[in-house]
Image (cartoon, rainbow over all chains, first blue to last red; front, side, top):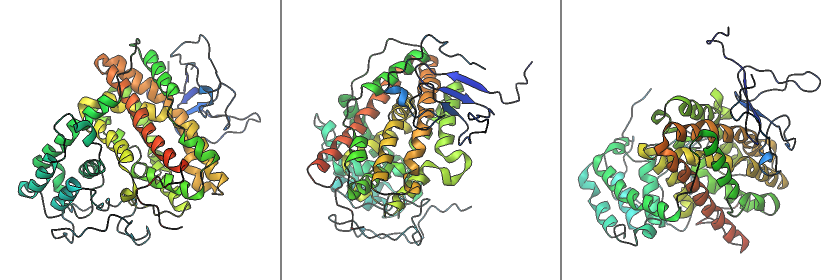
Length: 77
Length: 384
C-alpha cells in the first residue's frame, strides 16, 4: 500500500501532446545520466519534433502529431 | 515591515504634468525609487478623464470631494450611450482604467494606498468597467462547445488557440525586426510582463479543488519556484536591460498605445471580478497555449540581432515552461473548472477567445506600424 503522505510520481499522457511528469522522478539521458530538471512539473516530448529534448516545446501542435486511442486521463504510474 | 500608506512627500494639487510629446527621463534601476518592486510612476494624462483622475488621486487621501472633476469628465466621455463601446477604448479612458486597477497591484507614485477601496472611486471604476465589458462582449462572440467534460473542453480550447488566425508578431520578430523594433516590442510588453502572472493570481482564492491546485502549480512556476531571480517578470526585466531599456515597473506606460492598455486592463477586469473567474481561467489557458512556439520565434529573433543568452533567457524559458503550462491550464485548470462548475464553461471559452482577440489586436497594431516604417509606440524610445 502506498503512503499517501509521500509524493508520488505520476505520468500523464496528454492527448496529442507530451507526457506530463509530476513528483520526484529522475529523468535519465541515453547514457543514464540525470537530465537536470528546472521545474517541479515537466513535459516530455512524445511527438519527436522538439528542439529542446527531452522536453516538450509545443511542436506537436504544428506537426500533426496524434497520440491515438490512449486512456484520456491515464496515470501510467 | 512598514505599513506606509501616505507618500513621504505628497504631491500638491494641481499636479505638474510633463509634456505629452516626450518620454520623461526617469532614473535608472540602480538609483531609482522605482525598482522592480516599486510603484508605477504616475503616467502623463491622455485626456480629460485621466487628467482629472490623476489630479484627484494625487491631491490627497481618499475624499469624495476630490472626485467631482472625475465624475464630470466621465459624464462627458461618452460612456453612457451607444457610442460607449468605442469611447471606452480611447487612450484617455484606458489609461484612467489602468491607473485605477494599478491601485490593486503595486500602487501609483504619489497616490495614497487608501484610495484602493474608496467606495466613490470604485463606483467611478464601475462606470468605466460596464461599457468596457460590453465592448469586449461585442468584440468577441461566445465560442460554441459541445463538450462538458474536462478533456473535451481542453480539446476545444486547444482548437480555438490553433484556429487563431491573428497576425504573427513572433514570426516577424524572428525574421525581420530590427534592433529598434525589438526594443519597442519589450517596451510594449513591459506594462504586463513586469507583473507577469499577477492578474491571473487573483483567481486562486476563488477556486477550489483540482482547478485551484492546477492554477497554483502554474503560478508557482511563473513566480520562479521559490527563486526570485527565476521569476518570469524578473527574466523579462533582464531582457529589457539586455536591450538597453530601463526595467523599472511601469517605466514605459507613457509610450504604450491604448490597444496594449486594453489587453492589460482586460486581464485586470477578468481577474478582479469573482463572477468572471471562468473567463480569467480561460484567458490564462489561451495565453499559455499561444506562447511556447511564439517564444521560440521571439528568442530566435533576439539571437539573430546578436543578443546574449541572458537576454533571450526569458523567451527560452517560456518555450519549455509554457509547453508544460498549456497542458495543465487546458486540462486540469480550465477543463476541470468547466466540468465541476458547468455554469462557467461558456465563460472559460469566452475568456480564451477574449485573450486571442485582444492580444491579436496588439499584434495587428504593431505589425501595421512596423511594416510602414513607423514606431509602434506613442512616442519613439530615446536613442540607445
